[in-house]
Length: 289
Image 1 (spheres, rainbow, N blue to C red):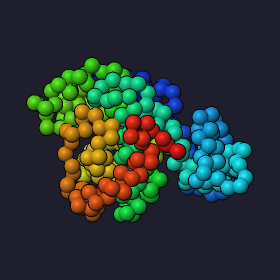
Image 2: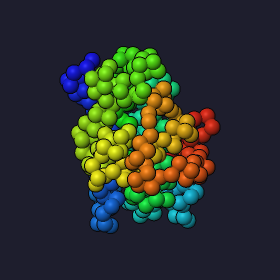
Image 3: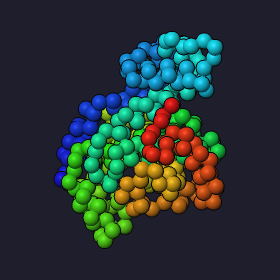
């Protein structure tokens, strides 16, 4: 399967997956808005029963709870604040999509979700430390950066097995193998999905350029490089890494340009691990809230 039409087939197949995170761009815009947007945010959350349940459960958890319980989404929004609420939504909606059963890449069930969560946590940590992007935006970008691989696996491409078998002997990177064997790259699928779902250009650029940030236009290169660095560190940590994870080359020029240093990235790993272990149990169970 090598033609441009095959790329469109993959995109069309995966657009119909239940719980696709198409609601996130709207929620992100509202989370960055004013208090007058809270009514619209409440309406969006109430469209998804599972999300509404997660929001209420978190608002009434020991960490956030006061003497009075939240009985409705409106009260929960006021208690949690729009930024915390958006993080819950991003994790819940994207997480449900990413745990859908798939084949390919040597994944165990939930591996892509675990790895994407780790990339998101790394990205959020680096965003706070280096002031390269808003932390919530970086977190979301980490969650959605590799949706094209999920789409390819969901499409049940037997070509993924061919890539797996040929990469060690014939190709230096997984990206090269995709281009030769599929005729396109997983990043092109990610780009198409995010455009179809109405994600802002920042996220589209992350999905398309995160492997090669030096090729990204200047306006969005910092956050793309941030995700590139987060991916590198998350791969080192190891949660949910597929067989493709070790066939990438770091873009040293881009990392240097925005100020990433290997020793500083390594020094952040204990803090990142501590955060990851709040959300991923020793058995691999994912707890988003």
